[in-house]
Length: 60
Image 1 (cartoon, rainbow, N blue to C red):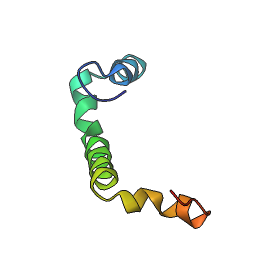
Image 2 (cartoon, rainbow, N blue to C red; image 1 turned 135 degrees about the horizontal axis):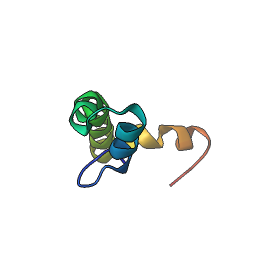
Image 3 (cartoon, one colour; image 1 turned 180 degrees about the vertical axis):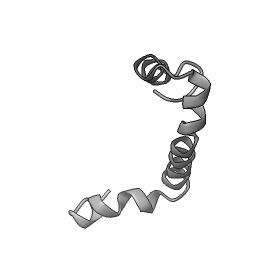
Image 4 (tube, rainbow, N blue to C red; image 1 turned 90 degrees about the horizontal axis):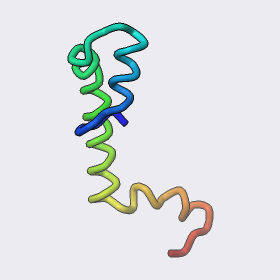
């Protein structure tokens, strides 16, 4: 909800805090980078996301 093209939460936070959307977008960048890093890890290292289900006995 913070990513383009719409970013509904950006507009909600902007109206609540009475700050311009541009300023909020600048503050959101670290979170977007963290989301992209997590997406990359999950995409390219599938064992990283499957370690906990396998710990619980998942065989797939």
